[in-house]
Length: 79
Image (cartoon, rainbow, N blue to C red; front, side, top):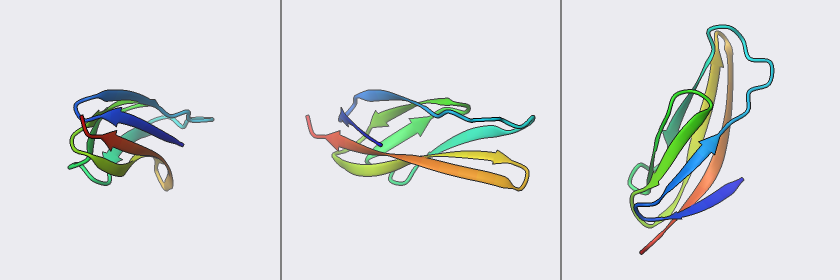
């Protein structure tokens, strides 16, 4: 999936975990923090546009040896 925001703008991201395991969690990372940052632990996070460009924001679900990742492409537009 994909989304876009302006520099300084924000987008709320949500991931769905089917059949979650006890003690498991979701963490979020940005592949390019110069373009966008992402803050959140759990199924919801907030992405903030930092500079014009495109990056991927990755949600990682980890439950012991089970690790699943999904990503969203975020385009950040110049003001």
